Image (tube, rainbow, N blue to C red; front, side, top):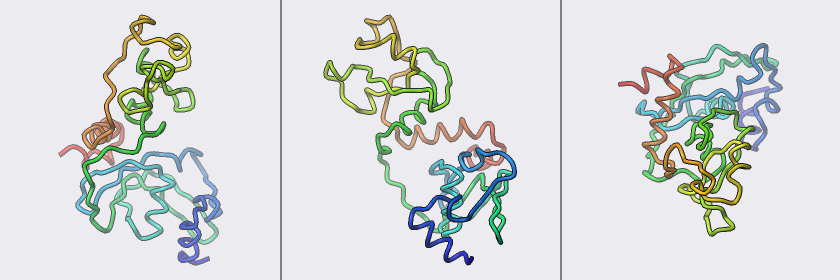
Length: 199
């Protein structure tokens, strides 16, 4: 099977595993590992999952700068899973906030309940409206926070002070500054990211 066929099917929206018939020898989470995305100028601009990074590399949009040690195998192809990729063409990054989504709220709040401070897996967290919807609260960056099930039940239909609860930090829109801060926090545990984030 040629790379061109792989690419066209990837563009059609098939998952990496379906397109390449890939099986993994080691960590089943390898395709979900975070990958640092650099602009063509080596400026860090985003974090994506390894699955997405592999598609970008195979489509010729990006190249791998660093690898994380995992391999993915297809019939005639072995891929190294990237840890850092760089776009081949410079992309102008507008100074605007990210799309409001559950994923981005959890990323902004670093998978940490904003009431009790416990770090949890995404599946164990909910989104809480600081001002409940039933009391006029909107679904906005400034009114949505990551929240564990226990704290969500405790708060119920109340404002935080009414439930004797306090937010760890004031919620804000996810902007470029927030994104860079999170990249640096994640980079502390990945030596391959450090040279691109700490300069």
